[in-house]
Image (cartoon, rainbow, N blue to C red; front, side):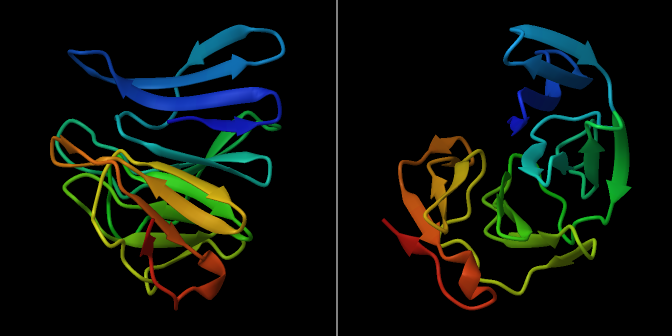
Length: 178
C-alpha cells in the first residue's frame, strides 16, 4: 500500500521473501527519485492513508503477531508520532480518508470490521456496520462520498465483488454489494 501527500508517494514496511523489513520509502513524483530509510514500523500488510498533509499507518503483521499500533508521519517535520492503538489489530486492511475521518476496512483472516479513526480527538469508533463479506488485501477508495471496497480475498481465494458504503450515515447505514 501507498499514500500520496503533495508530490510524494510513501510506502511502509514489507517482506523481502525471507524477512520482514523495516522500510520507509518515499518516491518523489516530480523528481522521479526514491529515498529509502527506516521508520518505527517493522512489518508487512500495513494500511496507509493520506489525511491533512500527513501519512497515517495502521497495523500490519510482525514476526509473531498482528499489530494494533497506529502511527502518523508528518512530512514537514520528517517525524513519526504514535497515535491511539486500534481496537482490533489488523494486517492487509484497506484505509481511506473521507471527510474528517479515516476508515480502516477489513483485514487478514476475513476480518469484517470497519474501524473509524478521528484524527482530531485521537479516538477510534467501531459502532458502524460490518462488511457484507470479510476480506483482506482489498482496494479501498472514495468516490462521490462513497467508500468502495474492491476485490481482495478470503484466505487464499481471490474475490471480484465490490461493496459500497455512505460514511456520512455512520454509525447507521449498510454496506451494499454492487
